[in-house]
Image 1 (cartoon, rainbow over the protein chains, first blue to last red):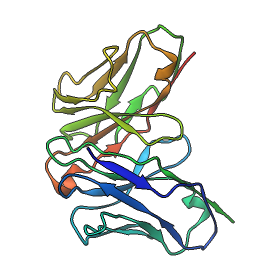
Image 2 (cartoon, rainbow over the protein chains, first blue to last red; image 1 turned 180 degrees about the vertical axis):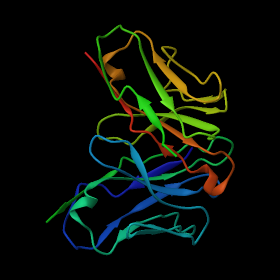
Image 3 (tube, each protein chain N blue to C red; image 1 turned 60 degrees about the vertical axis):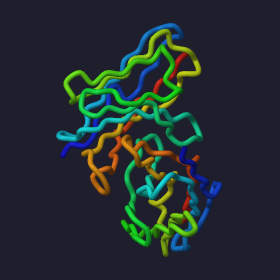
Image 4 (cartoon, chains in turn brown, red; image 1 turned 90 degrees about the vertical axis):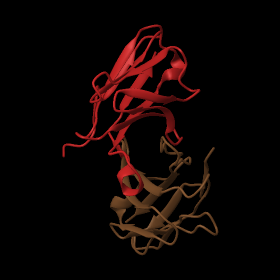
Length: 113
Length: 116
């Protein structure tokens, strides 16, 4: 089955710092890739996605590029804000007939003013 | 588009009691998923529906757990004879069904269960 390895947290940054959260995966075939964000006490919100190799997903200043050759989907943001403090999850879907998502443990990001 | 809704948002129960959670997916979404998330971990897949048919169940879903989606719209997840190890956030997600972008899953706010 699929598996995901995410950069271990917690990650603590100052406002306006550059963010990278590494994600590598193993999967059968070429799955779509997703980043979800979870704010305290809430469910998961879709942050961005990419459906094929070399696609770049982007949203709210965050970006991630689908790298098939390295099976990676690293999340980046040029200038983080306090409001970006949350847990970030990388997840490929399984493809096949059910498209279930496989999540990593998540990376807790804290941004200080 | 009102998003995926889940009820209740919080549930506290005593060990041995039965509990039932409800999920209302985004309208016209054919696929519905249940996941479980324990503290400090990512969500884990429990089960999946295509319309009213339950097509896959994880080994995590013991025989105390049952899920239904009777008319292909809302779904319920029941846990019988709850145990303390069932304490978790139960997340529901739905998707249009198809491939590519149509397979994007949208999550509800979750139901947090605490078994005393």
